[in-house]
Amino acid sequence: MDEEIVRQAGKSIPEIFANEGEAYFRELERQCLLELLPSENQVVSCGGGIVTRPDNLRDLVAQPRSVCLRVSPETVFRRVGNDPRRPLLQGADPLGKIRELMQQRAPYYQEFPHQIDVDKLKTKEVVRKIIDELGLRPL
Image 1 (cartoon, rainbow, N blue to C red):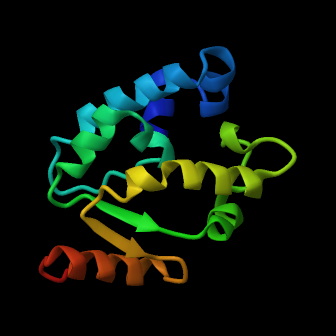
Image 2: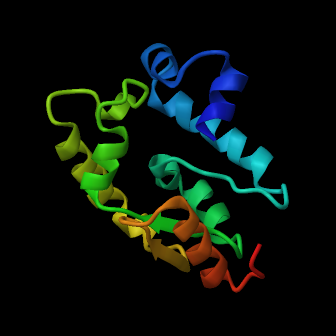
């Protein structure tokens, strides 16, 4: 979704946050979600903060094939902790911020009926777990 938001907005996520703020970004995120949810046969990868809006959480949880992929804060940090495109993680202690955000968002993540721990899995293993969790036919 982030790539689609950047494409539609014509500016990077840090620029959106700096110029319009997080609330505006969350509105763009909402609009993008509404465009993508009705589509079939695709994977929509959402950022971790999308669940902070009740309407987004409601719409995502209502999807029968919606899956929450769980990872540790340390894994998130390894993947994106130093990424300048992550405005909420800028500052002296990005790992601490990740822990804080994950703790705040944990009750929202728990709403998803399908949850998979993917901390130590490779991409193909994650795909296999999702297929198994959702009872889909193998590719």
